[in-house]
Length: 426
Image (cartoon, rainbow, N blue to C red; front, top):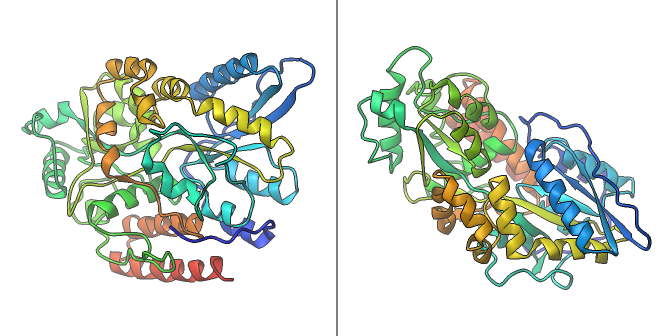
């Protein structure tokens, strides 16, 4: 974890650099405002979130419940797509008019804490004592917590049991190692034309970086050096072989959502899945199973999630903190995670009846909980948004651009080293 110095200003160049790390590959969502409840003597708190579709509708129900329970605070929410919320927030901060609460997607940018864009929350919000420790590296900077976990998220493997059986594979013994996965994926890919044993996102942005980080952890690697000042991933790329050498994945541009959305074609043997999409997999009626991610040197998974942060420019910080404190309750996080498909933010929330009811109805859910002990978030270093973008571009260059993996790794490492030096200067 980097030691950070707090600043109260942030320059336009920093905004533009941070914006390059925004995840791509999700459809933009149009802006929608929550209903306004007219009452007197209220502090109005604006939240910018990236929940969309059904999850935004669910979130609106929680907003309504909070507004009814808290007479002196009214929450108004606005929804943006995950790929657009960060640049819009940066522009709003630059203009001096950010929302009170910013919903950080996937991770809390360390640069925000470093530059005083968001405030520390230790004195304003008390988390449950059983809050998952996985959140700490990406929410605590310089000894202070800057993000309140909304819910967690991590990747696990999802397997098409019907294709496993068709390929003569034992569905009682799902892959445990990279070699197991490759062997099963080759058999499934040989079943017919346009049949693929493995599908992984490969477009620049957060989802592809998450996939790369997962496999890098499993291989015993790391993104950056322990002091956070240089890259550490310049080793065997591995992922390009699935497409160009082994031919168990299509040579086609895919976001992770597109890969998951094609599960219903019954042409895909396995994917790296996040829990929010388990409902989509179940809806296909294809017999499927999940299991913790594969082992090479060790087991590993990328730990993501969603986080509430409070803008330093907010004039309603205390009212915003009331909402964050309300959300931190295990009964709220447990029910929310169950309804939305996330990982609860604490063990107490995992044990909440609201989440237990969800788990009883979703046979794919347990594998994600089983992966919590070895799931790691991105390293909390200044310059992380650029690292995410650069490594995802590296994957695309090797997988789709035909660039030799070693060359792609070397170029990406040099870019990351340069960006870390620039971002951490002074």
